[in-house]
Amino acid sequence: HTRYWRDWSSDVCSSDLLTGSPAIGSGSNPLSLTTDQRGAGFVRAVNGTTDMGAYEYAPASSGTLITRYRLYSDYTKEHLYTTDTNEYSVLVAGGGWIGEGAIYNVFQGAGSLSGVTAVPYYRLYSPYSHQHHWTTDANENNVLGTMGWSKEGVDGYILPNAASGSVPLYRLSLNAFGGLHLWTTDANEKNVLSTSQGWVYEGVAGYVVPLP
Image 1 (cartoon, one colour):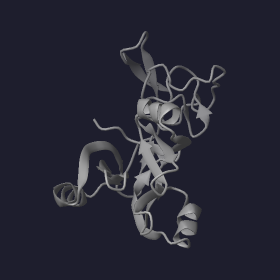
Image 2 (cartoon, one colour; image 1 turned 90 degrees about the horizontal axis):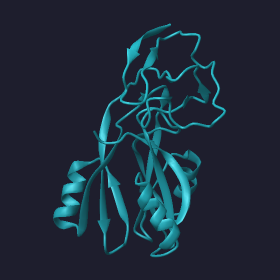
Image 3 (cartoon, helix red, strand yellow; image 1 turned 120 degrees about the vertical axis):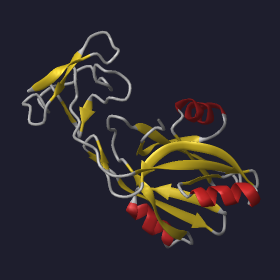
């Protein structure tokens, strides 16, 4: 129920598991490893189960990826995230925003990665604080919509759980300038802001696909 041995540039070679292999979901992870033998980018558990052996099987992926861009406003102190290249260009050219470039990929619509199905990522805007907010929590989206926030719809799809080929998207908040939030895949940025700059780390908002 394996295919062939491959060298993944780690200490030893590993053999791919085939669909239907009895080794899938039959293993254990007593050391709580986060990756399989191949290393970074290959999670040790898929959908809460661990396979036997050094290789973790991941079902085929589906869907279309789209790049997300990050901007910063020195006026509102907000970071804005968008997959709309026209919005990005217009805000940088004449809207007073500083373009910080492409940061990662999300799913444009429904899709999956390594067996994990992407979920809607909602975008809201507050006309009072002039801040945007993103969440995968439909209840949070609906509640904020009753508290003066404008619901701007689904702004891409992200993964609710870790999958091979994904990275965590961290969420932080700062009780200043009307209430700021920041989302980042940069663990160092998350650590610096939450340990020395007054930001509160709120956990992983979801998982996204890194740029090539």
